[in-house]
Amino acid sequence: MPATALITRFAPSPTGALHLGNARTALFSWLAARASGGHFVLRVEDTDAGRSQDALLERQLDDLRWLGITWDEGPGVGGPHGPYRQSERGSIYAEALAKLEAGGQTYPCFCSPEELQLSRKVQLASGRPPRYARTCAGLSAVDVQRRIDSGAAPAIRFRVPDHRTVEFVDRIHGPQRFQSDDIGDFVIRRADGSVSFFLGNAVDDSAMGITLVLRGDDHLANTPRQLLLLEALGMPLPEYGHLPLVLAPSGTPLSKREGAASLTDLRAQGYLPDAICNYLIRLGHACGHDGWLAMDQLASHFDLARTSHSAARFDEAQLRHWQREAVTHSTDAQIEQWLGGHLDALQAGEERSAFVAVVKGNVLFPAEVDELVGVVVHDSVPVSADAKAQITEAGPDFFVSAGSLLATNAGDFKGWTRAIADATGRKGARLFMPLRSALTGATHGPELAPLVGLMGNARVLGRLERAQALAGK
RNA sequence: GCUCCCAUCGUCUAGAGGCCCAGGACACAGCCCUCUCAAGGCUGGUACGAGGGUUCGAAUCCCUCUGGGAGCGCCA
Image 1 (cartoon, rainbow, N blue to C red):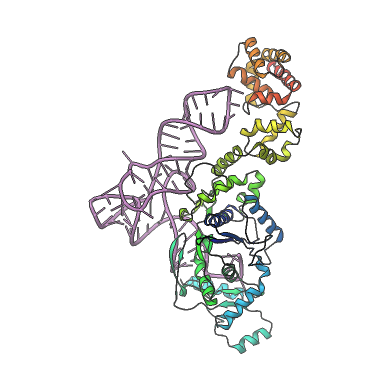
Image 2 (image 1 turned 90 degrees about the horizontal axis):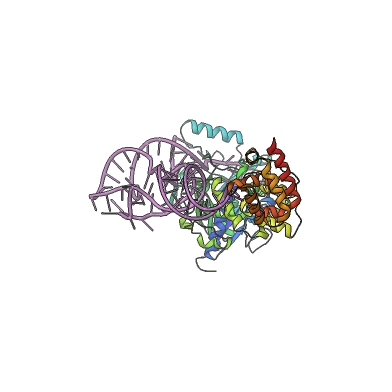
């Protein structure tokens, strides 16, 4: 590995669906590792047993793989720093906890949630920052034992050192400085014995050899706690980079509740993974290239130094732009696979591939193809109001001519339309629009010639007759 | 309330004192091309949150304010 190689990670918590903000953090971490010749670790933060679900985890991993993000270490692939699920790393945390305790840097806390909430309220009301009041910080060993004997299960708090200045250089925001006196003693082990985010996350990043932690801006103010913890433990400190948040179009932060921007939903709508990556690499990052980037080109256009410091809004119009690009950059075979079951009414093989070639330029999402499939396979199609107007304008005789000229020009669209032009005196839009309207029921769509070829003469004739009837009324 | 982060077109961004009466992309409008839509080509409008400094010169540096966000959880 190059000396500048970065070891990065993504550490999702399987308590919900991955949204675009998560996806961007994952993508940037992955790209930072790839661009530097380093590697990328995936770790599962499932310490909250009550909210973590295996099904959710599988979905997250699946969405990540679908996006094209692959991990060098983590669930399913193993690696030297496993296990990669925090729920299986209990002994590692126990060791860290023991070390902190031996150093006198922890103490058990018996305060109830109600007491803590009240305390916070009181402090807030008197204009002070709500910090833990160290109620249990001075409990004697006898006291502690007595409470435990009477059945109380304490949480463990980290004793934050007084009057310390914690400094670090954020890879995105630059030099940071915090005062330890602004930080209350925080819980590192819950009463149920599970380890808190602050401890588990920091210990794992360090123990797994992560050199750069890229995460959301919302963790910036958490970083000094973790630095203090790691320092007390004598463990190596990773560098940190805090990515600005991704906001919903409304300007509010993207939350797990806003399903619209979840990877799973985007995928279900038919968005292509490459489209999402092309969008994401330009969201809060100046990639310096306006054109389409294939997945293997992404890393060479990624530069941590080009990352924005301010939050970015999710704009579906831009995602759609990249979706269009993704469709045009896909091969016909890929499109056929993407369209999947929407093509069932068509014969596999030649008919499907011909159809794909014809409609490719007109489709953004698989569901849009249904109508077009109907045009090709159904006997009748719904006729839009615009199309009906076109048909009426042309009049019944137009369709009589078109129908009678079809037999002599079967399979020759150009010859057929020329013959209609000669017979009716119509050309250009006045010729093609009524024809398109009669044949497809719509005033717009893919190129007419190949579409007609796909329809077959019988269907064409039937639709001409119906148009004739429609125009006659 | 305290601490911290952030602030350029509608959106994503370029811009690290003069190259900027601010450039690109998406979106929007008009035109061209075209049987239509899409694509493509051309044209157009729209932005440095406010106020003070510093400087010959500020979108760029400093301060204040305003606005947005985060953290201060036995959530992560």
